[in-house]
Image (cartoon, rainbow, N blue to C red; front, side, top):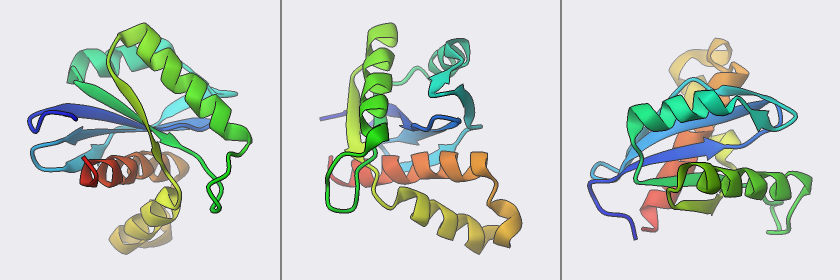
Length: 140
């Protein structure tokens, strides 16, 4: 259980881009940060350090990519490895949370806000991280 005043970082892991959002438990809302570029799933760890330093999160959520039937896919193990590395480097609690349909929801939200021109990859990934946070916060 995360305290109601907590700050939470949420990540939508991808091999080319990693969406990032900052959530607040008191409001159960999140806002997107700029997505991080990744090289075959490897982020610039200094950029992640900067995010941790700026936001001082109490907890971290990483989206768990699953198939619609709940089975794991190729990227599931890589997302788990990313979560483990976050925990190992930054010593903050890291939880995985089912991210099924988060990208679909994020695209729908962005399209409502501004049509196709809002659907850039980085924006979609970071809004997906917001969706992951909000879905996780609802069950806390």
